[in-house]
Image: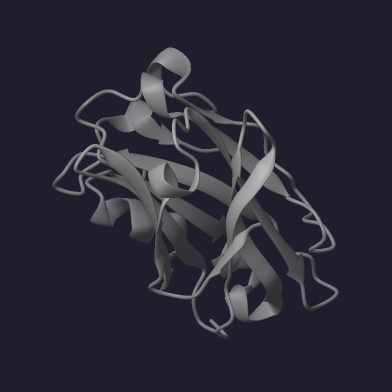
Length: 191
């Protein structure tokens, strides 16, 4: 049975699925208006200080795989769906992550939001869910419930290590300034 998280809530993946080795993060959304937004999922792999390990550990539509394939983006969905299924998926092999990888930050941003005059107020039914890749069982789901009418990117949640175990926290933090504003907070430069 899947667990429903609320903003700020957390869950121990080790407790829910003992021996969990691989997960798939499914992210989905639906546009509220006729002007369809192109949303992009990404993940930033960070150290204990919240800094991205390197540019190669920022996985997004322009860099689909991390070193050693620990994190893999399954491709960019340009339109977005009906909210009934995942629009983009990011797979994580927990055993392949290096010891310094302590946090994986899952971000969704609107491509070219300023040019298109779009924001998360025009998006509905946005969610992140985590699936055990071995059994295809949904472990949890976090539905963003707030109206983010000025934000153009969102941190949906974080997968983090605590005492050797993996946990997930539902974040729901919005940013103005698109993906560039988010990655700057994790030590990366937008070029």
